[in-house]
Image (spheres, rainbow, N blue to C red):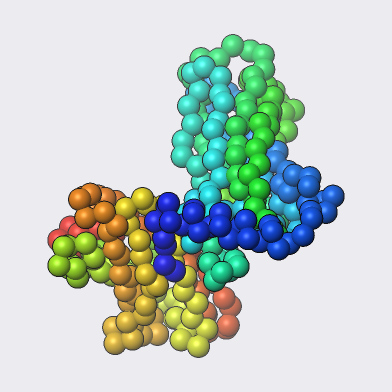
Amino acid sequence: MRERTGNIRLTLFWLLAAAAAGSAGPLTAAESRPQVEVKLLADRTAVKAGEKFRIGVLFKISEGSHIYWQNPGDAGLAPEIKWVLPEGFSSGPLFWPLPRRMEEPGGLFVNAYTDEVLLFSWVQPPAVLKEGSLKVAAEANWLVCRRICVQESARPEIELTIGRPADAPAGDSAVFQRYSALVPRGAGEHPDLRLESYWDGWTGDQRNVRLGIIALESADSLPEFEAQRREIQWFSYPSSSLTSENIHLDPEQSGDSRLVLHLLVRKLENNEPWPQLWGGVLTVRLVKSDQQVIDYALSFDFTDRDSVP
């Protein structure tokens, strides 16, 4: 996937959206209503001083519509969420489940969510809390597209009890478990895989192009990569200064249990330094001898080759 720069991408996107709106005809009553319903969830109904819990915005997306991943791709805008927490509470980064690759009008490829998705964070309460209750809110903004694209927003709230009553239900923990399993994991969290990702030299005269190498192996006694059913996708992390080309397999270095992939990465602004950390998500499929399919979504960053142990 080729990523455009922010301004060019958004300008082209809105031009296409306007053209689509002009040719789509008047909106139906259903399309004039909000296309996404949101709800604020917590993985428990009672919180305890000093003990982390999770909150998340559940997006219920109308049929035929979609919203975007943290890197929307060739067009679109990522959802924005700002947690509104009581004094003394702090939140961690947002977790993004794996998106799907979609093609929009004009041959634009985007990373999107359809149907439903939960974007969530961990929240750290202070060490001391008074008994009672507290309110948590989220200020959420998102772009939703169907025949046309519309900016929507909401401010869902939830009230939680302070303490741990014996009969307190677990909240929406099952929803969090389901979507947590869809968040890409670091390659080191999979003992059946070995992965290296590093920069391998410069290509451009201005040192503005680098080759990223990804080497992925399955453990000796575990499933092999099956060439006939191999599926690989690359999702770059958001960047205002880098763009990447399609990911390519190196057939000479790859085998049944080893994949070597090449990714050409270009720096958009020559006067800006290369970011110290940048990477993305690689999805790959393994097939066991009994034809059981295993899908992996691996997140990682590229490093300088000299720093690879």
